Length: 150
Image 1: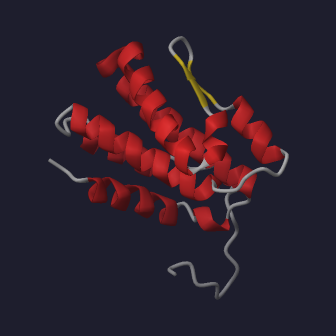
Image 2: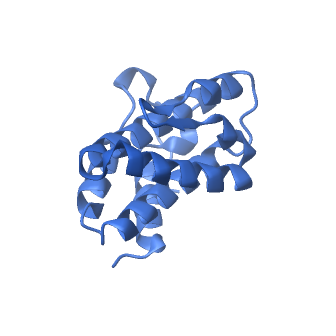
Image 3: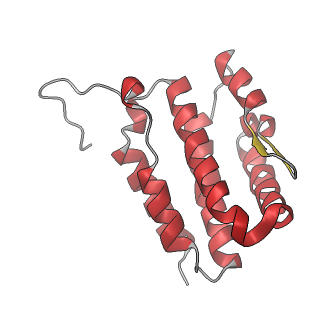
């Protein structure tokens, strides 16, 4: 069974690969939304709405205790994840903890899903996460000579 550290390593590698630290706050939120939505869709058929909603609700509850901004990210049994309030908060400048909280949510979600399914879904979820990227038009530009490895 994988431990949380391996899920964290996957999320961290994905964030580095996507140059997430160079993204604007709103672009970062778009990237996070895409990632969480992909993970949701990949597990929905296997686990069902009720189970997935309960898992996501618990993960978001834990996240909002550490990162209050995430109290504005909602999950509903019908329709799944609702990012509207979170987007409004970020757009109005209330974005404290967005990057750290997003990482926490993704790692926690993968960890709970992995524990629940004896890691059966983990390789597929890690692979799908690694593919999530912003459209070319909003990716950060790297200037000549800029170090992108640190």
